[in-house]
Image (cartoon, rainbow, N blue to C red; front, side):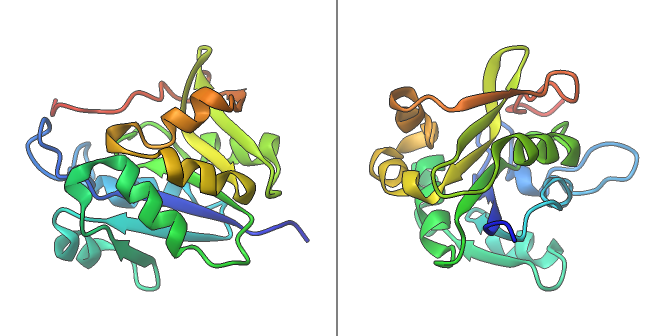
Length: 186
């Protein structure tokens, strides 16, 4: 049996540039909230935890029954705080966290599945998706890296400072998605 991998969905931002919380953004013919699309991308994980912040009550109301969530009370400080809150809330049995962002609407389960398949699930794993050679999300962080990530995660850079010092193995996913975050409605 493989080590448990948790999907960690960061969905706490207020979306200042976007005009509102991206977790509640809707587009396309179905009008589905981005938080639900992002949750579906994490179907290959053993469990999922959603980090909420801005509009937490409204976002929690659209989550399917049984989806676990935690609130980052300092969500305005940026993605780093949400990453710290999320990692701290994962159970001790979890050996790796696959970190996904809510504002990557074209990143599907196919991307997540490829990262998981290529990365493994042990506590030492450090893998991230790449799009045409450019590192992006999701990022698979083995438990051995969590303390270092938490120590350096500040502002909107999340695990970026840690990954600059400890480069992750890249898994090319440019044939599956563009991997660009959406910062403005459009």
